[in-house]
Length: 283
Ligand SMILES: NC(=O)c1ccc[n+]([C@@H]2O[C@H](COP(=O)([O-])OP(=O)(O)OC[C@H]3O[C@@H](n4cnc5c(N)ncnc54)[C@H](OP(=O)(O)O)[C@@H]3O)[C@@H](O)[C@H]2O)c1
Image (cartoon, rainbow, N blue to C red; front, side, top):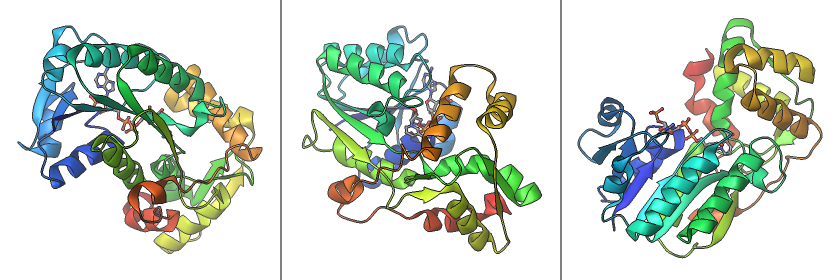
């Protein structure tokens, strides 16, 4: 079987590529930078260079002989890229597209509507699909590292609300499992971490992992927006993040599922393990 990973240099895509390599496959990757792909995977992958914003013939060439695609796209208009890939895949005879989506497709919160449109585009293409509807990633907590390092504090508008963040390795494990069988065709797999935790609880966990007290400080939606605009700029992404944090505060994002266990046969990785693996970022 030949697999193509789109988004291969990213957080989840790189882990999926590595899992495919570990399983003895030689995946193809569709990347914007050969250098970045080589730095990650040396000569263990076939590299196709292109940009989904303007793929031209590069996408068609990357699809020749491919059986399955793992697809990561991002942004308000990700539907455009999901549509381009899935329609081209169907034309090229690709049998299966696994799209990284979000649990929020089911709630309409944050980036949920972006991915709902993306999922619809994939459905319309006629290609067989699996959607990975993942909860928030544990790696989002890297965004807390600067204030924790500098001031020993995490500021958030999530209040006491809880969310079951999922470890990126669990997402990659589920994505790889669904890519390498046809057992999940036509399904949307809802996957979360093992338990819903408040940001205050996760702050304490990071404090324990680094051996220093870390304080949780609640801020308003307005303050959260102003801080987000500083690095993300004004617009849909900042709006989506504040929307997600508000939903966490209001208890609308505390879903926990057994999706990881069903797909992998083991429990999902807990947040304290993620924190222990990543202490260097918070010290
Ligand atoms: N964070 C969360 O809590 C969360 C929760 C649920 C779902 N999600 C979804 O997860 C996805 C993000 O996954 P991730 O964290 O793995 O992403 P990521 O680390 O930001 O990686 C994005 C990848 O896409 C590639 N890419 C970006 N624009 C491209 C283009 N025009 N053409 C070709 N490749 C392009 C990037 O390549 P370069 O190396 O060239 O930049 C990179 O490999 C999004 O769809 C997000 O909505 C996130």
